[in-house]
Image (cartoon, rainbow, N blue to C red; front, side):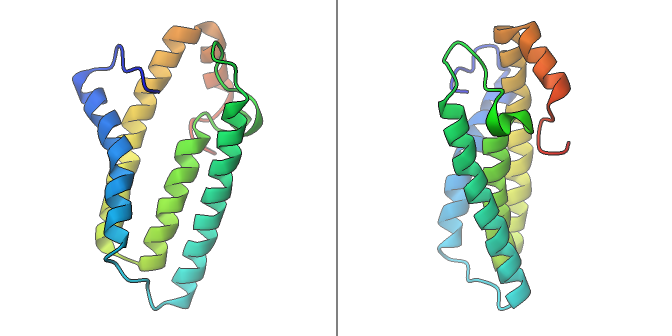
Length: 146
């Protein structure tokens, strides 16, 4: 959500950092070799492919949402934040493919920053869409199964 009205200073910092962290992650991968472990590589590729596919599905689903409503159809029936979940799956896949500690630490930081941003976005959506969104929150997990 681009509108950060009502976000605390900490939430704004988390949202901006969460938005910028994938760029740092991607830049770092240029300098980090893939792991020599075949199982890590295959597992990472599968996570990457699943995440990328899920991300495309989430974007297509979101694009069908009218501006005055919140998205609650398609993959948004099983997760309130499928774009974030699937994007983080892509970065998890890359981390597994490289078995790199620095990327693992950055991934954990990215997950925490996204969590903070998501909580702020959900509060803003609750305020904007009211009871309808609160009911959606009760019936749909924030992430996939959580």
